[in-house]
Amino acid sequence: MDKIKILWVDDEIEMLKPHILFLEQKGYDVDTSNNGDDGLEMIMNNVYDIIFLDENMPGLTGIETLEQIKAKYPNLPVVMITKSEEESIMEDAIGSNIADFLIKPVKPNQILLSLKKNLENKKLVSEKTTFSYQQEFRNISFEISNNPDYMGWLDIYRKLTRWELELEKSNDESILEIMQFQKSEANQVFSRFIENNYLDWVGGRSKSYPVMSPNLLKEKVFPLLDDNQSLFLIVIDNLRYDQWKAVQPVVEEFFRVEQEDLYYSILPTTTQYARNALFAGLMPLEIARKYPKYWKGEEEEGSKNQFENELLGEYLKRYGRDVRYSYNKILNLNAGRKLVDSIPNLLNYKLSVIVYNFVDMLSHARTEMEIIRELANDEKAYRSLMVSWFKNSSLLDIIRYLAGKKVNIVITTDHGSVRSQDPVKVVGDRNTTTNLRYKTGKSLNYNPREVFEVRNPHDAFLPRTNVSSNYIFCRKNDFFAYPNNYNYYVNYYRNTFQHGGVSLEEMLVPVAYLRAR
Image (tube, rainbow, N blue to C red; front, side, top):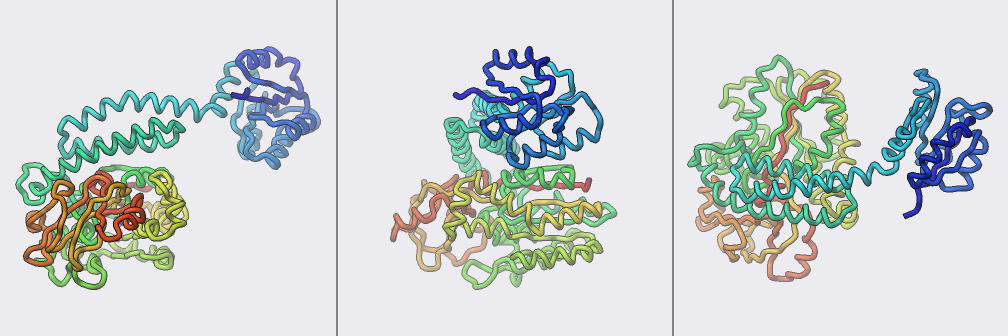
C-alpha cells in the first residue's frame, strides 16, 4: 500500500520539524512549504492525500490559500491550523469546507488523530463494525433458534436491520455474505413461526397476539386524538423497516421520534388486504361481510382500495371517535404538488390521513423497467433510490411545513416487500391470482411442503372466490412460477421486489409517532 502523502504549509515550518519527524516515523510521507503561493504550486505538481495549512501567514493568507485549493480541488481534505480562536476565522474556514480545525500549539497526537479521522475513518469504522457483528452473530443465532415469541421476532428483526445498515458501509464482502446467510436463516425460522401461530392470532384462539393491521389505528393512532391539536397520519405504501431507518435521519431534522414500533401486517401482505384492514379495523372477510359495497374481490375489475376513506369513517364511528377527518391519496407527482398547496386547509381537521403510493410504484417499476433494475440492483441500492426520492419529494415538503406548524405526525405503512430469489412451481386455472408471493383459486396444483397453505380461507378471515378455493403463500424469498415458459419467467422475476407472502421484510413493518422540534 502506498504511503499517505501530506503537504504542510506554515511560515514557521522550521519550528515544526519534531512534528514532521514524528509523522515520518509513523509511516507518512510529508512535504513542506513556508508560504501559500509555493504550497499551491506544489499541490498542482503533486498528488497529496491531505493538506495541513496555517491560517496566519504573510502574503497569501491561510484562508485565501484555502479558497484557491477548494476552487481547484474541492474534495482534497484541508486541516486548518491557527493561533487565533476568533469566531469569524472559524466560520470562514468551516464555510470553506475544511476537514478539521486545530488551535496552536498543536501536539503530535492531535495531528495523528486528525489524520486517522479524515483518512482512515472508513477503514477503522469498517473494522470495528465487522468485529462487533462477529461478536453479535452468535447471540442473534441463539435468539433465532430459541423459539422466540412475536415480541422476540421484533427484536431479532431490529437487530438484523441495524447490522445490515451498518455492514453495508464495509468493503468486506465475506462478512456481508455471512449477514445475508443469517438473515435467510431467520426468515426460514420466522416462516415456520407464522405458520404455527398466525391462524390462532386472527382466530382469537391465542391469549396474546401482536398489534396487526386491523388493530393498528386503535392501538397506535386513536389514543393520540385525545390531544388538543391536529394529527397527521402518513401511510407510505410498501415501506420496509430498513427503508424507514434510512430516511429517519432526514425526518429527524424536523421531528423528534417519540415512539417507534414494528407491527405485523396481515396475510396476504398486499395493499388490497393489508391496507383495507388497516383503515377498516377489520379482517378482509369481516369487511366483505359487514361492508360488502366497500370490498372488491380478486375477480372484480377496478381498484381494490377505492373505499379506504369510507372504511376509515365507519371505523371512527364504531369506536366513538366523532372527529372531523380528511383523507388524501397521492398516486403521482401532480397530486403530490396539489396536496402541498392545500395543506394549510387540512390543519382545520382533527385527523388528516395521507396515503403515498411511491414506494409501491417504485417496486413495480423496478420489475418492469430495465433502467430501474440497474439503479436498484440490491437492497442497498433500493434503499438509496428511495432516500433520493424522499429528499426531493412533495412528502418531505409536507413534513417540513407541518414541523413549522408544530403538528405531530404518525408515519407507518401497510406492508413491506422482499427480494425474490427462489422459484416455486405452481399450476392454476385462468382465474388464479397473478401475484408472485401468494395465490388463491380453486384448481391450484403445488407441493404443500414448499408453501404455507390455508385450505379454508375463512380460518385466516379471508374471502373465498368460490366454494373450493384456497390460499397459498410463499415463504422467505421464494416466488411462484408457472411451468410454462419457466426459465424466461424465473429469469425475469428473480431479484425483483415482491410482496404478498411470509417474510420478515413483508410482515414486520414500522409505525412511528413524531413530535415537531
